[in-house]
Structures are given as structure tokens and as C-alpha cells.
Image (cartoon, rainbow, N blue to C red; front, side, top):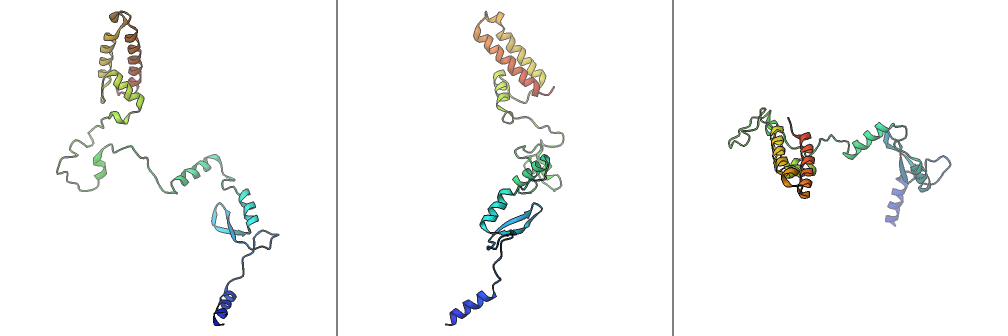
Length: 189
């Protein structure tokens, strides 16, 4: 007997059930829906039918212009946290330790400094540029003068007058011309 009395006491203390916030509904409002985009922590409470109706009509981006929507989506992709580009690598390893006292006992960073120049590595280039380096038979880093010199040597070897009109040599020369044009765009002068 006592146990039933305690259960009835708890029920008597609990708040009355929340009603649906839809104007013409008297059912229990068990499902919440945000009131507005700028008040996402304030909710309407609806019955199942009315929350479905509300959600169907809800548009988080209504009233926003295209650039605002784009900015909102970008912020959401990183959970509204600051972010930086990845994969760029460290251009100058010393910049990591600029404000710290750092003892380079093994001389790891001896060549890195403000005057040290980042040397391009073939792995940092896209496939087409790497293929162009391969066709020309050279490896980065290279200057424009070295590129021109290599190009002239290859053209002399594969010129149609030297090879008697060999079609394979002509095709190879076309490849070299394309590779030279591609590399000339990226090699510093």
C-alpha cells in the first residue's frame, strides 16, 4: 500500500503536460522546434503532426543573401572554429621557433634562415608538370637559362633534318615543345 502512495505523490508534484503551441491544437506538445535562426535555443513545442508541418515550412536560410549563405555553410563545415590551409608545409623551419630560445645542437636548421630559399621539390608539382620535367630529362630546381639550354640540346638531337624525317623523332619533338612551354610558365626567370 505504501508504495502506491509514493507513486501518486510523485505524479501529483510533476508539472502538467505541455500543450502543443499550435493555436488550434490541444494535444500534448512532445516535439520541439527552434523559434528562429537567431534563437536556436528557444523552442516551440508541438504535437507530432504540427512539428512535421512546421519543419516542412522551416527554412534556416530565409532572408539571407547568397554570400551570407555561403559564409554560413563555410563556418558550419569547420564547426564555427578558426581554420588554416593544410598541406602547405613549412617554408622556413626556423619561423616555428622565432620567439623561443632554440639551441640547434645538431645543425638541423643551419641552412634555414631568412636568406635561405625554399627549393621546389618535384613532389609539390602536379602530374602534368612532373611529366614535363621527365620529358625534358631534368629535375627541379632549375633556372630559365638551364631550361633553355636543355631545350636547345634536345631540339638539335630530334630535328627532322638530323633524323631524316623519322616520325617517332617528330612525335618526341612535339612532346618536348609542349613540355618546354609548360615549364617555361613555372620556372622563375
